[in-house]
Length: 238
Image 1 (cartoon, rainbow, N blue to C red):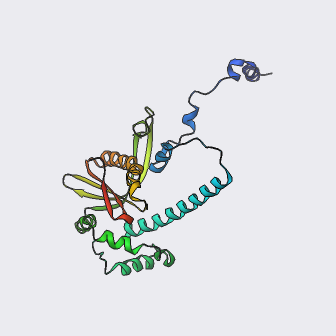
Image 2 (cartoon, rainbow, N blue to C red):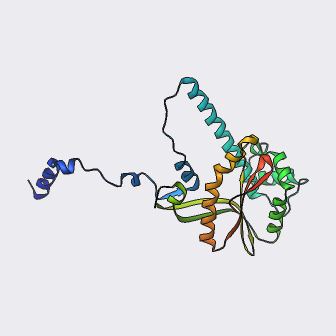
Image 3 (cartoon, one colour):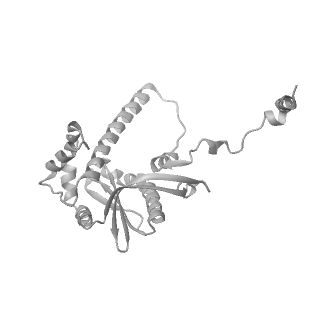
C-alpha cells in the first residue's frame, strides 16, 4: 500500500478522528448573504410541535391566506413603485393604472386587484403630499436596493455574527438634514393588534436605517411605517 493509503487507514481507525465534530457546523448552514426577511425569520424561530388534524388544516388555510396576502401586497407595491407621483391625483388614478397595464408593468387582471380605496386615502395624506413634492424636485427615490455588512447579533441578541445583508427599501425622501425612510405595509389588523403590527416590522426598519446610513453617509431622520389599509403612518424609534 502507498504511504497515502496507509495514512488514510490509520486515520479511519483512530477514535479521536472518528468522534471528531466540526466546532463551527452551525455557521456552515447560515448563508453568508441574507435578506432582511430571512433575518426576521431567524429571530422568530420556534420549535415544531405535534399537531392534531384540525390544527394542521387550520394552519394550511392560514398559509394559503398569507400567500394571497403576499401576492396582493406585491401588486400594491408594484403600483406605488411605478406610478408617477408628481402627476398622481385621485381623478387620474384609473388612467395611471391603465398606463402601467399598457407598459406591461401590471396585467389587466392584476390591475383589478389594486385597492382603489386604500390608494385614494393615501393620496389625501400629508405623507403622500410630501412625497409628491419630493418627486417633483427630484428628491424621491423608490425601490432603493442596498447591500451592506451588519452584525446580526445586534438584531438577534446572539453575539457577534457579521453577515452581508441585502434588501430593497420602498421609498426615501432626501432632505437637507437627512433621509426620510418610508415602508408600505398592506397588513389588515384589529385595533388591539396595532402594537404587534408595529413590533413585527421594527427590526426590519432598524436594518434599513443602519444600511442607509452606512451606504449614503447621511442620517436617517425619520422612519415611517405606513399601513395602507388603515391610512396611518407610524414614526418608529425617534
